[in-house]
Length: 128
Length: 310
Image (cartoon, rainbow over all chains, first blue to last red; front, side):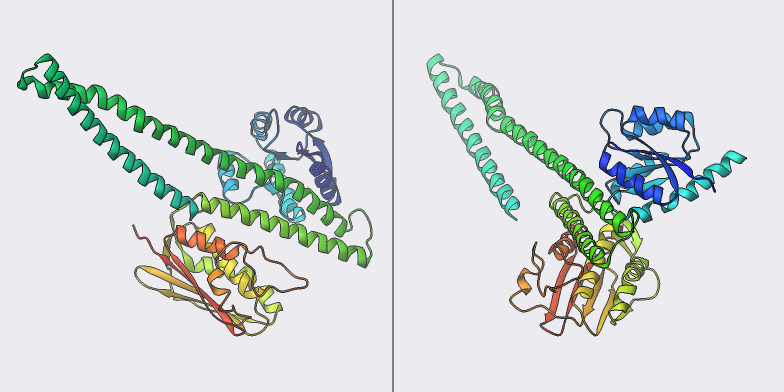
C-alpha cells in the first residue's frame, strides 16, 4: 500500500521532529511547515492526504490556516494539534470543522490512531 | 481563606467610611446653612431650600470623590488582576506543557525502539525518566486545577446528568489495575437513574482521585463504592481496607501538598493535591466531603452532593 503523505504544521521545531519520527515509524511520509504561509504553500504543492495543524502559532494562526485550507478543499482531514485537553478542546471542536485532535501531552502513538481511518473516509468521498 | 478575610475587612472599612462621610456631609451642610442664613438674613421659609441646595452641591461631589471614584478604581484594579491571573495560568499551562510533551515523546520514541534496539538497562533508565515526566505533567495539571478552583473557574457546568453510568465508567478505568493488585472491587448502587446537577467532568475527577487513592494505599482486601440516594442529595463513599490515616494526620487530610502513608519505591507517585482538588470541586457544588479512618485498617471517604433540582 502506498504511503499516505501528511502535512504537519507546528512552530515548535523540536515537537515537529518528534512527531515526524513517530509518523514515519507508522508508515506515513511526512512534510513539515513551521508557519501558516509555509503550510498553505505546501498544502497546494504537496497535496497531502491529511493535515496536522497547531492552533497557537505566531503570525497566521491555525484557525486562519484551517479556514484557507477549507476554501481549497472541504474534504481533507485536518487534525488540530493542541496542548490542552477537556473543556478547551470541546470549545474548539464546535468552532472548527476539524476531524479530530492530537493532544501533545498524551501518548502520541494513541493520538495518531484515527488518522488512517479519517483519510479512508475522505478518499471514499472523493470516489463518489 | 486569607482572601475572604481581606474582602471582609475591606467591606467593613468601606461601610464605615460611607457612614462617616454621610455624617460629615449632613453636619457640614447644616452648619453652612445656619451661617448663610445668619449672614444674609434669609427667611426661615427659604432655609430648607438652601439646605437642600447645599446638600446636592456638596454631597454629590463629595460622595463621588470619596466613595464612588475610589470604589470604581478598586473594582477596575481587581478585574485587571483577575485577568492577569487567568492569562498567567493559560500561558504557564501552554509553556510548560510544550517542552514536557516534547521530552516525553523523545523518551517514548526511544523506548518504542523506533531509532533502533535498546538494552534492558537503557530501557529501565528511560522508563524511570518517562514515569517522572508523567508525574511532572500530573503536578502541573493539578496545580492548574487548584488555581482554577481558587478562581471559581473549575466547576463551570451545571447540567443534569445520571451519576450511575458515570460511576460505572470511572470504575471501569480502574478495574484492571485493581485486579492486578489482587483486590476485590465492589459496588452497591441503587437500580435506575439518579440525576444530579453539576459539572460531570469535575465529578469524574473527584471519583478518579478517590478511587486512585484507595488503590494506591491498599495492599490487600477490598475497595467498595456505595451510593445512598435521598430525595434531596446523594451520598457516595469509597471505602478501602488499606493503610489508613493516623489521628494526627486526619485534620490536614484535605489540605494542599499533604501526603500520608506514602509508598516508597517504584510506582505512580501522588501530587499531594488530589483530595484538596476533590474538596474544592465538591464545595463548589455546595456539597460536603469528609473522611473516616482507622490507622492500619482502612479509610472511607464520603461526599454528599445536593441534587439541585430545578
